[in-house]
Length: 289
Length: 302
Image (cartoon, rainbow over all chains, first blue to last red; front, side, top):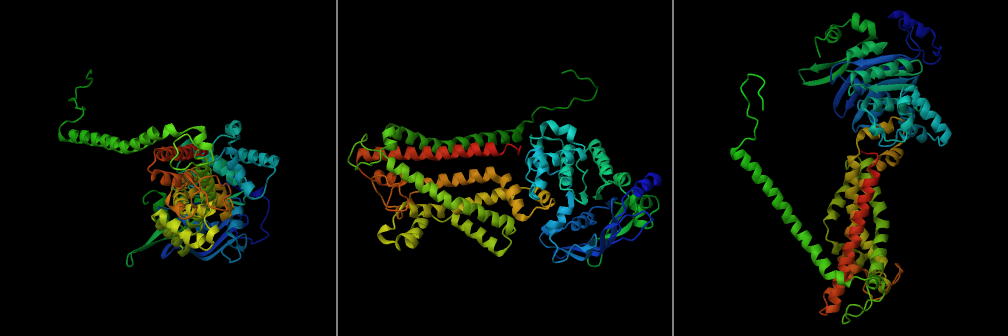
């Protein structure tokens, strides 16, 4: 398990010039995200409390934990998707490659162009397959037909979908199977060449075969992208991720409130084989949650 | 049926008794209600066709001189009123449809669906305006436009303004309902690609809702085309075509139905029925176009 992983890391370009993250295990790349004491609120409700973690370049980081533990909320703060939720608010600091994400001058539009997102439910636009992929480049100002054709083909090839759909690019994307739609959504995210891809339970609506295809795809693209994935499926976390963050729900019986906390964060192997926290151990062995 | 196992047979036939009777009674009531609904609808259309069909001819639809009431059918025609109705309604649509769509976009996309005070106000006022009697719209334009302009106040344009006031809340309501139906996950998909709010609205929200918006707007236009009251005080009544919307009084089908039907002469009454049938056909054509649009734009929506 350790050997091939090390090889991949060693062949990676060294990009730790800016915001060199905390070195971990000696093989971590540059830090992409650094969250410091992040708490998220929906109006008065504190959904997540005091999360600090570092996410590294060209790795797959998995967020696991029981329902309501705030893992999706944390994911959505990373590209400011939660700005769209009325009443949502973030405290603490999140740095993206050294830049503070919640600074006043930061435009969420610019953030999301670099940090793409794949959602739980496949959500292709009610347009043709071609127009779905070309959407992102078009809103970024690319008009040339030749250039768009090129991007559509490249993105679909990267998402391992080209051979299945190349003859029906002008057909509606809604006519595809669920698994194909989700890979189309990944291809759509890839079309704007983001730096980071956030995935919010991308396989929860898919059957095991489609899930396997998406996991293979993640392995293939991780050399070029940094991926953060929220998953309910612990086997999936062990199969795809380099690091795992385990979140849990903290209940306060006195005030009858609950909030999500980050319990443990580390190498996936360590989290699953040698968890330091008893709550992590109970969860990964299936005794709780 | 061959019983394969030695288990006791289960009775899977429809259960009898009171439960079954209740179901049958409910079914009969539904059908009766359906027939009762059809009776007034059918009678209206039957009456109008029966009495109006003989008036319809090419001359009736196009001849630009509306004859005096005493003249029998076959003299002149309703061309002036057809032109007036089409012009006034079309211009009212030009005013009200874009404004209404923009208003609904503001309420749903920018004002948080009525949560900000301004979008709440627009939403509330458009709800109230849907219930305002149409004659009030006519009086309103009469007061703010026709009277200040004195003798030149009566015009097709004033009629268009009155009809636009009537259509605006209808367009806002129907468009708003359609925008609400656009699922949030489509908006999120677009935002996640780095789209701005206006981009999301123009490229995702409006295209997804376009068929409903178009058919809702056409229904509002059809409704306005048949209104008499807003035109009574705004366009006047003339007997020949005035194709200039902005100058001088004009006429329209509902006004002609009103004035001819009040007259005791047979020819005038027949012309009123003919005009009524013409108006129904115009409304029907609009609804038909609405259906075609709905079918065409839902091609990708499945």
